Every structure is written in structure tokens, then in C-alpha cells.
View 1 (cartoon, rainbow, N blue to C red):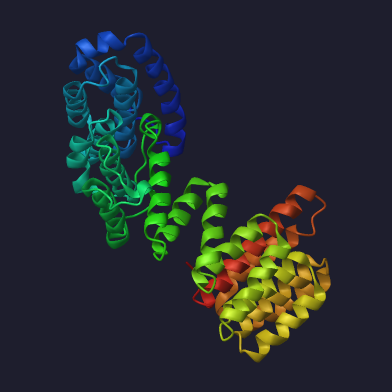
View 2 (spheres, rainbow, N blue to C red):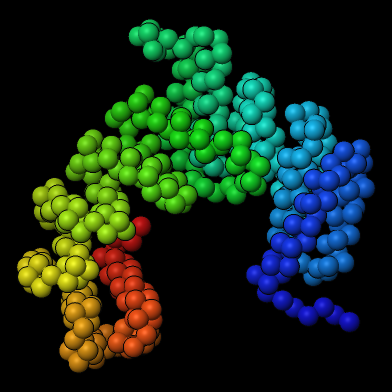
Length: 395
């Protein structure tokens, strides 16, 4: 009988329980597994084939990856490079996609780094510099650690940096030149425990000191901080950017959104004023002024920014949506839906989108407080994304 199809999300829930049980087995039988790795992987494959005969390739390989790293994490031989290579060789043969060899090669390089074998780690990692920004910082860290080990880093005493430290600096410049993706690699937890993130931030902060006129390091850091949900580091980087690059629209935009997320209305307003001073011909600061007036429900501020928006020729569809949002958030139901009907007549081609706006608008006047709060947030976020797209400001 053919197995009933199930979405990957449901299968993942079931896999997580089996993985939990298998992890407990690994912790209790680590030496037994090490003594016969092929038999262990045969056991793992049997579990997958019996429990999930139609499992997707991606979920199958993710299971193998997680189990393999768990074995490495638990093993007493985890510092034996020959053992690691043997373990990963079996893992690669067990995967359906052999392309997964890259992640194991990278993990091996990181493990060598964790063991203090920096020269070998550099050789293992250098061919993967374009895969993820974190690889460049790891290589730079290896060079910097070699410089420290040699006692040759002379920057603290005011001397010329050693050759190894110069190589570390070169790797950070390569990070800017190569522009690898940030956060592309999804490492198992054991790899995260090898202080990869700490190494990334340590080297990035050094690079900002080494190259104080290079804004790209701050851009890279902001991207990683946002992906990691690290608001503290975002704040630190934006503070540096606001002092060094006070007229850069990219950093002003990032600072504005940071203030908005933190519900710092006065801080966001100050950023809007700075935008207008530094970029008086741009529509973007005016749009943010309208948006901030809506969020804070300030009628006078909204009227003022609306007047400027009209004078500067902001697209009428954007202005109408802002009017709708302002009246809606102010609680004026009749007026809000009157504006929405006018928008529908003017933007017939966007009715598929406006139907969703209409639905959300109805929910903002619900008697369910939680429903109202959710609807307002989704509605404002949706209008914001649409307007930014129209203004060609979407990141």
C-alpha cells in the first residue's frame, strides 16, 4: 500500500522526535558507534527507509547531516582529524546528494581551527571564501591567531604589523571585494558552539578599526545582525555609521527602521529630519515622514508632510494609500472606507491587492482586541511594502 503523502512540515515534526531518540542513543553508545561507523549508518538508513519511505531528498540529507555532527560532538575522538574525515566520508556516501560534501569540508576546516591547527584550517577553508562571509572572517582569524602565537603582532606597540597580521587584514579586504552571501550556510548546533559567530564579530570589529574609511564592513555586519536578530550589535554598528557616514542614505534608512522597531518615535523623527537635510530632493524622507505621522497619529505632522509630498510630486496612489492608512488608524471608519472606494476606482488594475486591504480594514474595527492589533500591523506593513516598491526603494 502506497504511503499517504504528507507536507514536509508535518514530516519534519515526526522526524524531530525520531532524531531526539536517535541522539539519546548516540550519547549512550558513542564508543560502540566509533568502533563500527558503517554499521551505524546502515542503522540510520534503515530508520529513515522504514519510517519515511517517501521522504524528500532535502529532509533525508538534513537528517544525515545532523546525526553525523551529533556523532562528532559526542565522540571522544572528536579531536582526531583522521577520525573526522572517516566519519564524514561515510556521511557523504549515505546522503542522496553528494553536493553536501561542501558543508562537511567546511566543518572539518572549522574543527581544525577550533583545535588550533590554523595553517591546516586555512588550507581547508580558503576554497570556500565565496560561499559565506563567515568563512572569510574565519580564515582571517586563523592568520591573526598565528600572528598572536608568534608574538609578532606589533600593532599594539605601534610597530609595523607582522606578515601574518597583514594576511589577516588582506582576508578582511577580500571579504569586501568578494562580497559573499551573509548567513547562507546553516550550520548544525555543534558548529555554532565552536564560536563561529564570536569569531565573525571579533574580526569585523578589528576590520572597522583597521580600515576606518571602509563602510562595507558596517553594511555586512548590519546584514548579519538583522538575520541573527541581534539588536544590540545592530545598535552598536548604527552608532558608528551615524558618526562616520551621517549623510549616507543606506545607513540613515537602516537607522530609521531601527528606531521604528524600537518604538522610538522621537529618534525616528530626528532621522527623518536628517534625511531631509542631507537629501532635500529625495521623496524617500517625505514618505517616511508620512509613515511616522501615521504611526504616531499626529494630525499636524501628517498635514505638513502631505503638503510637502504634493509639492514634490509624490505618486498619487501612494498618497491616497497614506491618507487611507492615517484615517483608518485614527478610527474614522466611514471616512476610511470612502477613501478606499475612491482608491479602487482609480487603481482598477490593483483590485486583487485592494481586496486584501479591504478585508484587513474590516478586521481593524473588530471587537476582538487581539484581532484588531494584528490586522493593523499587517495592513500597515503591507501598505508600506507596496509604497516602497512603487518608489523603487525596496531593498
